[in-house]
Length: 80
Image (cartoon, rainbow, N blue to C red; front, side, top):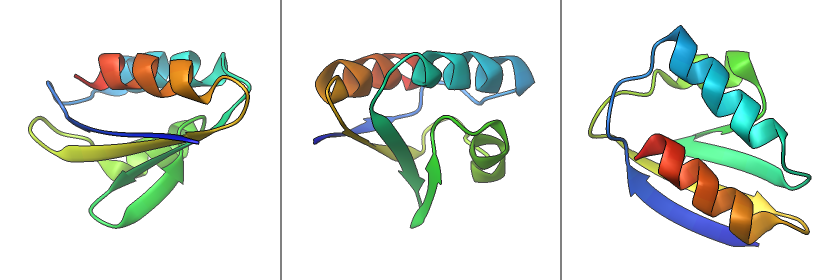
């Protein structure tokens, strides 16, 4: 399991949400995103939209699986 906490660099519109989900979906690992005690699957467009990700928020990324470390690093890069 790999876990990272990052500060979001910019607010997410529909295009950024779609890119984020595409990035998460290319990994075999289970990836969860937590903001303000709300956790969703990073591979779910509706889940990510429901978080209302905005600039300056603290986001925790938790990845579990064979490529968890790489997945968490790449997701953190997309958010930052």
